[in-house]
Each structure stands twice: as C-alpha cells, then as structure tokens.
Amino acid sequence: MAEFEGKVAFVTGAAHGQGRATALALAAEGAAILAFDLARPLSYPGYGMGTPDDLETLAEECRAAGGECVPVAGDVRDDAAVSAAVESAVARFGRIDLLFNNAGICAYGLAHELTEEAWDAMLDINLKGAWLVGRRVIPVMIRQRSGVIINNSSVAGLRGMGRLSHYAASKWGLTGLTKSWAIELAPHGIRVNSIHPTGVNTPMNDGLAELEGLTPREIAERSAGNLLPVPWIEPEDVAQAVLYLASERARFVTGAGLVLDAGLLTR
Image 1 (cartoon, rainbow, N blue to C red):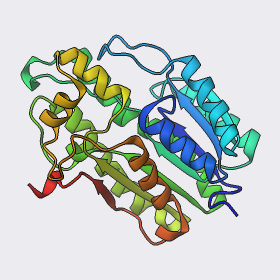
Image 2: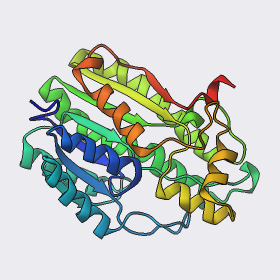
Image 3: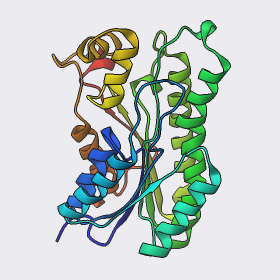
Image 4: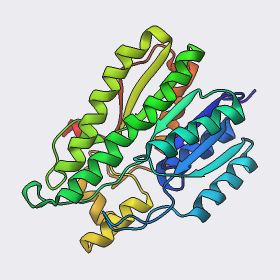
C-alpha cells in the first residue's frame, strides 16, 4: 500500500519548484492533492511565477503518478480565496491531513533601502499567507483530531543574511509560528514542523539570478556557501523531507525544524 493512500494534502505555491516536487512525490504515494498557486505575475519581486498552464500540467502529472489532484489558482494573501479552496478540498475529499505552507518569494535589498511595497509583499506572502492558510485548515484538522502542518522556512529563518533582511524576518516569523502552533495544536493530535533549506534549484533561484545579473549557480553560491561541495539542493530533496515529516515515521516529531542546508550552518 502506498504510504499516503487515503490522505489529503493542501500544497501552496504548488505550480513549480519545491511545491511541485512535493505534490508529485505525495501523489506517487497515493495522496490526493489540492494544489494552490497564485499562477500569475507579481509586480514585486519581478521575476516569473507559476502559470495556469503549470498548474494544470501539475494536476495531470499527479494523476498520472497515481494521486488525485485539484488545481486552484489563488493568492495566499486573499482570505476569501483561501477559505474557498479549503472548503473545496473538504467538499471533494472530506478531510485535510497535510498542509504544506510553501508559497513564498525572495529578493535582495539593503534593509534601509527597501521600499514599503517590498517589505509588505515579503511579509504578507511568506508569513501572513502561511497564517491565513493555516487558520482555515486548522479547524478542519481539529475536527479530525489529526493532521500535520509543515511550514517551508529557510536557513534564513535560523540566521541573519545580508541583503535579505525582509526575507529573513519573514522566515524567522515562520519559525516562531511553527513552534507556537505546535504548542497550541498538540492537544488536538496535530503536529507542526518547519523545514529549513539552503538554496534550492528552482525557477525562483533562476529569477533571482536574472535580477542580479548573475548565473543561477553564482546566485546560489553567493547566498549559501554550503559546506558540502554543491551550490544548491534539488526540489526533490525538499519533497522527501516533507514526506518524512508528514509520515508515521515522524509521529512524535513536532515543534521541530528540519535543516536541509548541505552543511551551511556548520560554517
């Protein structure tokens, strides 16, 4: 039997990158997926996002892998859209067993030179968006007396990083949100953890490189400086971390942060 047969996952930022890899990995293990993604451009940070075609292609590939998938275009900052998507998932599948709060952006800028738009976009998408989705999914999980929430933070959620103050602030916020939710939700049988990747080989990394006038490898090496001789990890590495934390193998893991940093924090 597939590990997640009969389970339902709500994945944000699902159209490409880490969200896409995780949705596909879950589908291959039998999960049904609600794939939620903005699927349109943003004025900030200015690089390409997932598209409606990406979202539809993901749904097709999830089905081919063996899991159901419902693609939904929506903004994690839009409470009405989030609420409708959660209601759709429950109406279709009856439950939500896993929330992967993955939607996020990244961009560079000195703290004192950031615009208010830049600051608000970073915090609203990366942190407030995770809270908005969580507050709609959590009542479903409380009714079930079970569930797993995984927040996609970053190594920047565990240390400061130059020219990434707004990004780090959002990711430190996710770390605090994770631990606070873990305390609040443990009595209901709900586990909450965060993951902390180093640079990941995704379209977002490509977009950052283009904005900075560098190659994707250069941007990864400048941002990370991993101990292992790799400039980045792959989206599939993140997916495997999510699958572990969502599984019964991690049944007593909560309030934790799983680091996938290729040794960066050891430096």
